[in-house]
Image (cartoon, rainbow, N blue to C red):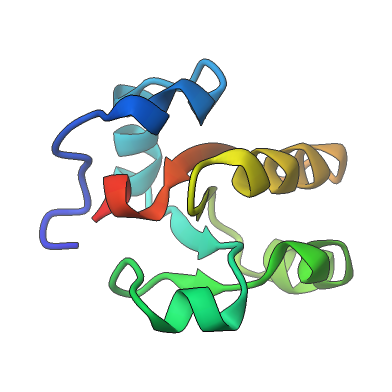
Length: 107
């Protein structure tokens, strides 16, 4: 990610669940951390530079780790479905986050 901003929007942006690219860019400008919730195998095939891989099935058990990051969280996955689920979990724990959709749209 060269400038920490979303360059374009694609078909999967539908899954951003009401979050516009401006909101995501604003979070990134405030130091948001990108958390990719795909499996390690998927993550290793390609990911956003400096993103952190915490698979969806590990999100609940990683709440304290995520809170210690003390930054907004932009979640991504392959299509936006898993990151949407992760966003719901984090919001239940009062963590500022948004569904960034597909990891490839955040590159």
